Amino acid sequence: MTPHRVTSLSRDERLIRAFLAGGLLAGLAVVSLVPPAYLPIPACLFRSITGHDCLTCGMTRSLHALAHGDLAAAVHYHLFGPAVFTLIVIYLALFASEAIRGRTRRSHLLSKD
Image: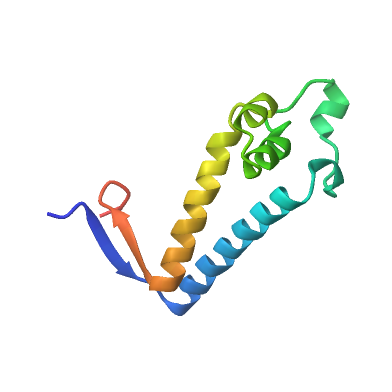
């Protein structure tokens, strides 16, 4: 019994994965090239109402710091920034690989059979 099952992807599934990979790549490019102060994102509504940081306050600055290799600043801005950055990179690689290869590998732990 093998731990993984390989499944072929349809053309539409491959396109979806390619768009997801492209979106993640574009997001990383924007976060790394544009300083957070210049991004056209609205101010935090939660913070403007309560005066307290929300759960994602500082995430954009953290991802920007990580894209420039500054781990200490990234952790200072948001503790989970490095984990989010790592997940973005992993999913980018996964979606790109699946779009190119046309196959996906599923663990038996994740399958419904």
